[in-house]
Length: 186
Image 1 (tube, one colour):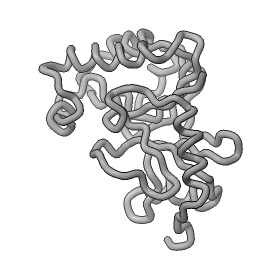
Image 2: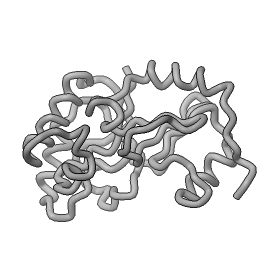
Image 3: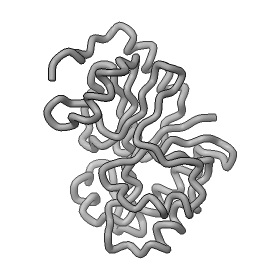
Image 4: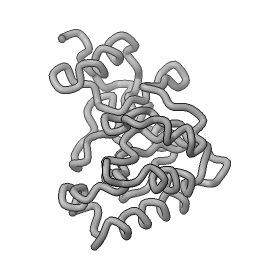
């Protein structure tokens, strides 16, 4: 089975403040434990997982601790790099299958960390504009809201801190087929 998820921010103290409505825990240790538990509750060791960026947002967390957390997570993992994923060697050391900037699935679904935006995510917009996918699977946006046209946010804060089964992504891709996204400006 395939899963997608993003923006766990293990070890990030401020995420407890920024995402207080969705991360109702008392401490970083409790948040980390809850995120690991919810990941492993759904994902089996032989499942495939797309981690769509920002596993961590902590320069203070020791490298060994980061690798330890990643090794606790079930699944055959691929990292789609996010804006906080600057030390990619830890993902390789933790056994990730691959680390990429974006991924195209079934010639119709683009998986990329940021939702394409001409003003705030120019590189992502250029990639999406050149490919014109049926759906863009992304993370980065923690604040709850509506999916943009032809987009699906897999940030844990949008999904009760759980990963998203790929069948949900495929349903969203069918819905998005009739949606209009303007790739012409920029």
